[in-house]
Structure formats: structure tokens, C-alpha cells
Length: 247
Image 1 (tube, helix red, strand yellow):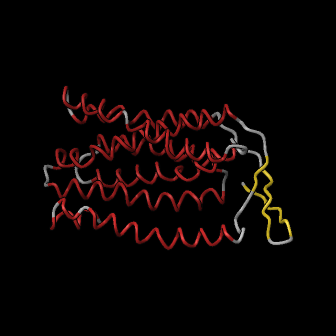
Image 2: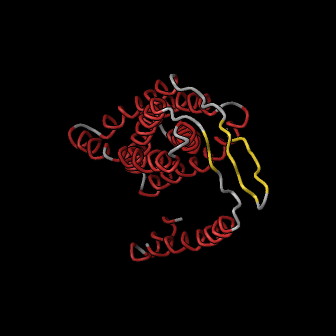
Image 3: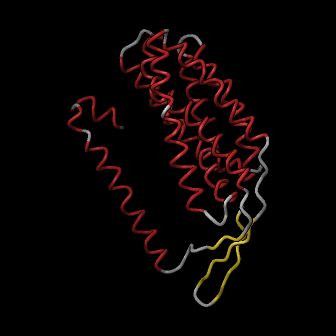
């Protein structure tokens, strides 16, 4: 969507997609504000913190972030080099990368409903190893297929990792959310300048090869993670306290 706006009108049109995003967020925030005002959705989770598992999870998120931010940064340029195409070819690859993310997020929730979250994340990262290898080495337009598989494989665990972090630290849900969504993702971005330096000294393909190892490391970390025990949460509703179970 941003490319469709920036292409015809240039960078001065950058505020337009930002304003569109704001317009979409406002009604959602308004709805959440009304729910909180009535007490709906207010929960107090009880359970023991599993700091060791949370640290492993955080490291897995860091490795996931390195490969995703690395591909986000260089996939457009890499596609142009590989396919000898225009900037449109690179933009298409970047579009596929983020479109696969939207699909992967929905798919992750569905799969977690059938199996536990740890198993889903573990298998997704294992698939991502081969998908990233395909992005780096697959010939021709097959690159786009592996970009889509990589995106889905990396985004299936995304929302599941947030809830896992909250369940590993039930007494510090805000800290867990901030770490899994903010701190660890930002740390992954620090690898981009390193990849750029490798690309300048050798080639972009050589710089992307280490990204194949990142989901493998996440997979190894998830192999040692337990599925958190079911916690009991209390959700007050008017004059009745209703107990609900959260996974």
C-alpha cells in the first residue's frame, strides 16, 4: 500500500499511509477503552514465574528478529540482483514478505488451537530453515515462493511467542509483553549493519547466508521449552467473579 502511494507521488506523500493507519486504529482503541471502562476483559493471572524458559524464549525471538529484519532490509535489493529486474521486482518481493506475515499470524493461532504453542513454533522454525535457504539459493522466480514460505514460517510463532512470554512470567505480564514485542525485536535490528558490511566486503548473497542459521538456533531453543501449565485467571463481571482458563 505504501509503495502504491509513494510510487506516483514521491516521499512527500509518506504521511498519507500513516494517517490511514491512524484512522484504522482509532475505532479499535475506542472500543477497547469502552470495554475496560465496564470491566470486561480485566483479568488477574495467577502462577509461578519460569524465568529460565522466558530467557530461552527471548533468545529465540532475537534470532527470529535477526533473520526477518535482515530479509526486510535487503530482500528488495537482492531480488533485483538475482532476477536482473527493476525496482518493481524488489518491491514485489518485499510485498510478498509482509503478505506472508499476515497469513502466518492467522495460521499460527489456528494451529495452536490444534497443537500446543511450543510444538507449533518449533515446527515453524524448522520449516523456516529450509525456506530461508531457498531464498538465498533458489534460482529464478522460485525466489518469490521461498520468500512467502519464509514469511509464513517466521510469523506463525510471532503472536504465539507473546502469549508464551506472558505465561512464563504470569506475575509480570507487562514486562513479558514489552520484552517479547519490543526489546528483543529491536535487538535483532542491530544485525543489519553487520550484514551490510559483509555485503560491501563480499556480496549480498554471502551476507544473507548466515540468516539460514538463525531459525535453526530458534528451533534448538524451543526444543528445550515446556508448554506452560494452565493458569487460572479471575475476571470480575459486575457482582459475579467468573473464573476462566487461559492457555
